[in-house]
Length: 387
Image (cartoon, rainbow, N blue to C red):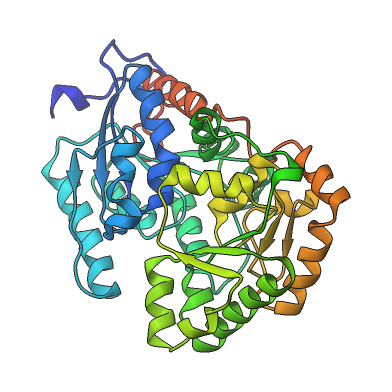
């Protein structure tokens, strides 16, 4: 066995070698949310490699994000073909990566995309422990592929970094040991805290920012038609609407012949924006309407109300505070929620709410917990009874 991976007896302290960690990011939100973790781990003295798993292969979605956030990948996997081919390719890359070695002391994944369960499965196949950032989110929607990815990660991870107490409670209900779960906040807020983008005073906010990209929102004709009707209704009553088009959404609009449905004087369709520009758009909007979990969190940080274009959300904290409203893809419900959330008194109330998703120092907490667990030799996977 390589000396770098020789175990010490359980419960003892490791010598001074720094932990060697590999961070896997597949999509634009993962890059954003893992960048603070990478920076904090390196500041703490850990050796960190970053792998781009290739889920977002469109340069508009991921190409510049690694560089913009200061975490250029050490390795970038290329995935080709349709969804089955790309998913299989991701797993094949992950298995080959861990088989080739040297194996890290910990693999770190984030969120709920295909990268999370596939990398975690490959890591466990080769005896590498896994840390799951943003663990414990649950929408309780059995049709959500993200929900399946999250629950698989709960079974495979050794360290679970939950963003909220509600996420921690979900994991404990599912049988995850309490000692393995740590409430740390959400790493996206670290990026917001250090971005330099500030909340815009309520009186200077204007219009509606719309984003939509989830398969359940845009793939089926009827649901995409309902989305376009919702966008037009928001533009009629509360515009202007700015709608950065995710490549998936643009493709589906063209495939279903629905792009013309968004030809409206109050709707501006734009290309995917750099991260900082998206933050500026969020902070300066009077309302966001989205199916994105990340935008729900960012809106909460800036005190901007959110109309959530879903029937359930794994981020219920904003809904509980009245900062966010679940409306599905129903134009009437969206308009009713928008009318309520755009009331001046409600705008001021929401602007003063504390962000329910964290304080912007999550990366530091994760780095401290990872280094502590490594030094105490609590990461290594062991058979029952060993140690």
